[in-house]
Image (cartoon, rainbow, N blue to C red; front, side):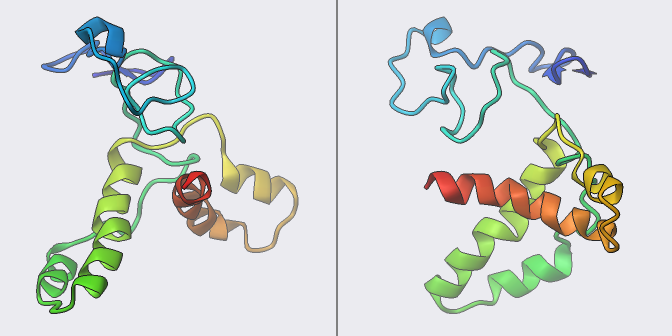
Length: 136
């Protein structure tokens, strides 16, 4: 289960799993701005494992399927494999189980009378990658 106040995993094997390196007596090389074991671009201050099934209030509507993975495994050049694997299956899975909460891009675009507000899905899911790419 997930506590929807802060999206902390609150039931099951990983309930209230700490992401604070001091809990494990670690001197972590990579932390977020709150000193937690998260990617540096991750601004989540919650000291426990969190999950959310939406990204900027958008559900992933095009998850990678068997056909895509089959095609991926047939690639013969590392440059093609490495470039595609990080965004398509890997990145999409992050948007499905990790998510980004606290913003609703489709609603904002609709409130601005942006005629193609359903493109909010593409913007929201892209935004997940943009914040990481901008940090790098």
